[in-house]
Length: 336
Image (cartoon, rainbow, N blue to C red):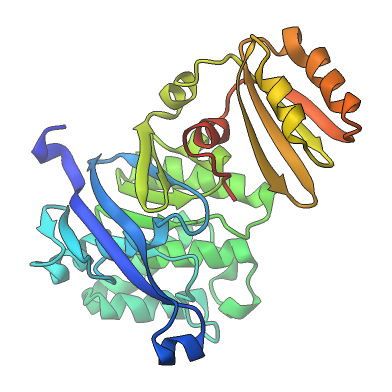
C-alpha cells in the first residue's frame, strides 16, 4: 500500500499490563504477572477502508483502539493516524478521529441527544454559528429526529448507540474508531445499524473506519478486510472471502455433544476425509468442529463412533467454512 493511501499505520505496537491476583496479593507483591494486550502489531489501513479487527473478548481489540486514539500510551512502537504520530502529535490525532467505546458511558444520560451533541460540539471548538446546523444534520442522518428531545436514559439501546455515533461524527473526522458498535443491540436493529455504518458513513461520507467486533457475521457483512487478533497478535489478515477460502477443507461438521472421550476423538481424526477436530465448551455442552473434505462421506461413520461411546448428540449440522471456522482453525480459540 502506498504511504499516501495509508490512513492508519502501526509499527511494532506493543502494550503490556501488570496483573495482580487480588488486593492482598498486590499489596504483598505476590502473583504478579505481565499480560501483553497488544503484541508487536504492524498494520496498514487504507483511506476510506472499512477495516475489521475480529477476535474474542480479551484479545486486545479495545486496547489497540485506545492506543490509536491516544487514550493509552504504547510500551513500544508507534502509530500514525491521518499522517500524525500518536506520540508526537496527540492533539492533531484527536482532532482527526471520532471514537465510540462499548465499555464506557460516552453520553450524559440526564440530557437529551440534542443537548449532548450541542455540548460536545462546543468542546470540539466548532464555531457557535455552525453548531446548530451540524447537530441537526447528524440527528437527521441517524434518524433521531423524533427522539432528539427525549432524555438519553429513556432511549433504547439502539438509539443510544446512534447518539454515541453522532457524537463521534461531530467534528466531521476522516477516521472513525468503532469499538463493538452493535454489542447489546436487538438483532433486528443491529442489521439496520450495520447497514447505516456501511452505506451512510463509510460509502457516502467516505470515512475510514476501524471497527472491532467478536461477531463474525458483522465482520463478514461490513468489512473490506479483516484482521484476526488473538492474545494481542494478528493471526491472519485478508478479505472475508479470501479468509474463508484459506481453509482447504470444503465442509465443516459441527456437533453438540454431552461429553467426549480421547478414544472417540482419536478414531474420528483417523478418517481419511477428516483433517482436524477442534473441541471447545459452549454452555453445558461440548462442541466438536470436524474439518473435512466431504461431510456426506464421513457423517454416518462419525455419528456411529460417537454413539458407540455412549455419548449423547444434542445437535449436528454441516456447512461450508465461516469466518469463525477459520478463526478456530488458526487459533484453537472460540469467538465469544
